[in-house]
Image 1: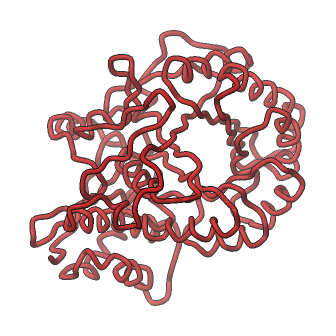
Image 2: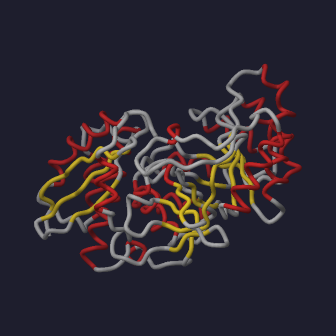
Image 3: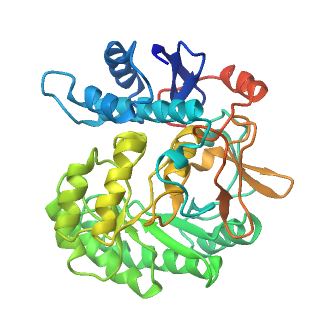
Length: 395
């Protein structure tokens, strides 16, 4: 089996997929996408294509190295790594299909049959949109006051009691200034309200979105009594040493890594004792191949893995294949734009897949056992989705 061509798909609302075609008729799917930078990643996929034509797609590790070292010594970076990541997903999809087994079987076999999911929450009611529409196109039945902690409690209660999630993540945006110190207690009150609304048996994490390190310390201290599952990205992403400073003053689990590319920076952060939870993005950090290595490095440092995944259901499907294998898996993120409520159930990926992921009573989805990434496209649903507008900005 040899690779014959790479086909780019612009999938609404804003995703980029790649189809890797072969002379055996098998096709692999992956997601080479970088939020709000799709065209440069598409160009990088096209640059990498000649290195792949005529090659055996099941030699995934070799092809990863060929792509990574191409370019006269220019390695890494978000554009190149996002392109490699999407192609890598497609190569694993092809390898699984060629062998007639799911990707997880090629990676060593499952360590679990179900994957625990978490959903973002805040001061507004959750809603859904039709497949292919951007999330902003939806509108909840009624609005809440995003400044009122009671709004956070109500939204959390709906997502747990009605939608079935057993893990949530609160999002705060304090910015990078110091003047926000006067709002720290308000943020803590909102987190406490989510904890109350979700109930004692639900884990709650928080993403504080890269504040000034001094503010991060104040926020962590204020939230710590409510036992967050983890605090995500409590520092600017550029400096690991800033993360080390924040992590060194708390026992709260610290999570980071969604904008880090490749295993090396994760090793650096772990070697300095900066992380309890690794969050590589399978569509950016190097695909399935590299994220499995990152997870192994994390296992040696007693760190858990919560793959970042704010993209399409395709990136989620690839993430779930890897989640199934990892002994240090913690919980899986997904993009709320992909949620549907069907017959009283929460469904992820409806319209895209024939068998979308369905949340069970314990907030988990089953690991699919079909070959490759375990998914089949819903041809009728995809026809409707592809007829909708596509935008450069992430939907």
